[in-house]
Length: 82
Length: 164
Picture 1 (cartoon, rainbow over the protein chains, first blue to last red):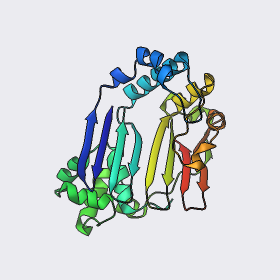
Picture 2: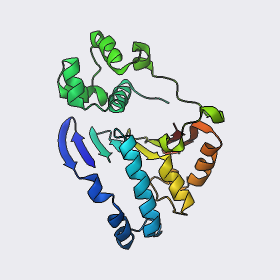
Picture 3: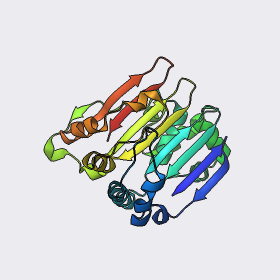
Picture 4: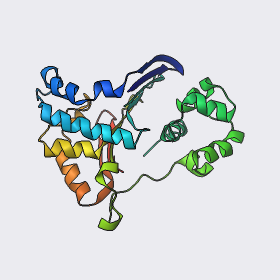
């Protein structure tokens, strides 16, 4: 996973995290304890394990995938790539 | 969709997995110059446009004016891509000039629908909160592709949702 933040072309954050450390069956199992959507919805370990499995497969087949990208009118840029 | 030259350059660069530094090196300019192009603070020199277009595999016309947005279309069964290779894209352009791009694999939307997982609100933007992902999945399974939804709010925010 890569989190990349620039401001007017100047790199502010360039964070690399091992995707396998975040997206694995164990983290999917324990995540429901900490994870709650804004509307109060809670997810089960089974739901998250399936989601993680699909995500990992997608990343493997599409390594160039950028999940979130934000450009602000002030020249800021944020990019999250799994 | 009203995209600027800077945004088209940024999109084309990212689609090719290039960083601003790499593009700058190929074009013989500084990374700051590329950043300024992408933020529409300056435009590339006219003599660089053919080289830039060639690098992105588009014509100079397409680079300057953009390609037409994909219209909604019904794809015959035989020509449909596997849903695991499809991407649900959400574009939000706010009235302030901010822009947000979110890409979610359709496979993930499918898992969410199958397991009864409610999709979280992908941003605080009210225009995105009522999106029925199950309905989008149902449309995609029937072969509907392209620009599925376009919402304009009274504060000047535009939301596009399309599948490719």
